[in-house]
Length: 497
Image 1 (cartoon, rainbow, N blue to C red):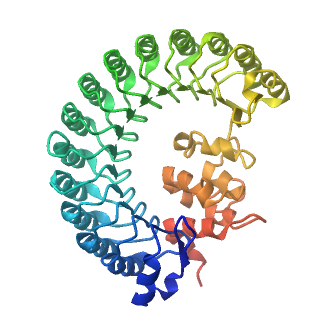
Image 2: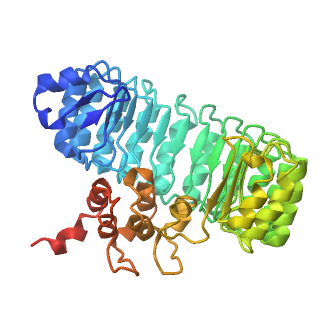
Image 3: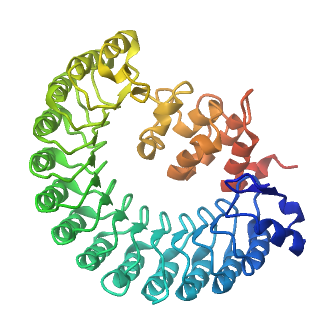
C-alpha cells in the first residue's frame, strides 16, 4: 500500500496496469512506499510512470531491495522527468553501477534538489560519478546523503573537487561512516576554504584523525558559510580538539559542532571550554563519550557562566561525578542562554546529582530540556521544585544507566555507541529493543543501522535471535520482524524445511 501526505492510497498489486498507475500518481505530490517491498520490478514500474508524470515532487523508496536494474530504470526516468525534486533511495542495493547511472542522469536533470543514497554500497566508483554530476552546469542538487557507502579517501576527493569552484548549489553533505581518512579530510578542507554554499557537513564515523582535524580547523578559519560540522567518532585526540578550538576563536559562522567519542583529553577540554568564553556564535556543542571527568565539567561550568549564546551542551558519558555536578549546578544559577543539557550515563549517585542540579535550576529560567539517568523518587521530587515542570513543553528526560527491556529510551539515546554495548545481563541493545517489542519505525531501524551484525547474535538471556524476540509478545510487530529478516535473510535458512 502506498500513500502521500494527503492520504491518497493505491495498491502496488495493480501497478502492472499502466493506466491505473499513471492515474493514481497524478494525484500525488509525495510518493512514499512503506509497507510493501517493491524490489527492482516495482522500481521499474514506478520509473516508467515517472517519465510521464508531472505532479510527484518527492519520491521515498527506502529499504526496498532496489538493485542495479531498478536504479538504472529510475535514472532513465530522470532524463525525462522535470518535476521531481527529492529522491530518497536510502538502504537499498543500487551499488556503484546503479549510482553511476543516477549520477549521469543528474548531469542532465535540472530539478532534483535532494538525493539520499545512504547505505547503498556506492563505493569509490559511484562517488566519482557523483563528483562529476556535481560539476555539471545543470545540476540543482542542494542536499546529498552518502552515509555508510565505503567511498573511502578517493571517493571523498572526488566529491570534494567540484566544491572548490564549479559547484554552487550543494548546501548539505553527509559523508558519515565512509572510511574516510586524513587524506579525504584534507581534500574536503581545501575545497571548502573557498566554498560559499555548503552549510552542513557530516563526517562522523570516519578516521579523520588529528591531521585531518587540523586541516578542517584551518578551513574553518577561512570559511564563514558552514553552520554545522559533525566529527563524532574520528579519533581526533587532544591535538585535533585544540586545533578546532583555536579555529572557533576566529570563526563567526559555525553554530553546531559534534565531537563525541574522540578522546579529546584534558587539554582538548580546556581549549574548547576557553573557546566558549570567546566565541559568540556556537549554539550546540556535543562532547559525549570523551571522559572529561569532574575537571572537564568544572571547566565547562565556568564557561557557561561567561557564555551567552550556547543553547545546547551534551556531556553524556563523561565520567562526571559529584564535584562536576556541583560546578554545573552553580553555573546554571547564572546562565541565561542554555536550553538543553545532556548529562546521561555519567558516574556517581544519579539521585543526588538530580538534587544538586535542582538547586541551580530554581533560579534558572532558560533550560527547557535536561537529559538524566533514572533519578528516582527523591530526584523527581527535587526536580518538581524547579521551573522545568512549570510549562507543558518543559521536561526532564530520564534514561536508564543500562539498556534493559524496560528502558527503551536509554537504548535510543546515544544509540551510536550503545548499539555495541552489553548490559549487565550481556544483552545488546537490539536484543533489549526486540524483547520490548520496539517497532521498526520507532527506533529499531536506527539500532540495526548502527550495529547490523547484532542481527546475527543470539540473545544471552533467551537464546533467541533478535527477529525471534521481536515476534514474541502481545505487542509484536510483524513489520519489524520482516525488516530484520530483510536485512539478514540468511538467518531463516536453517529453519526452512
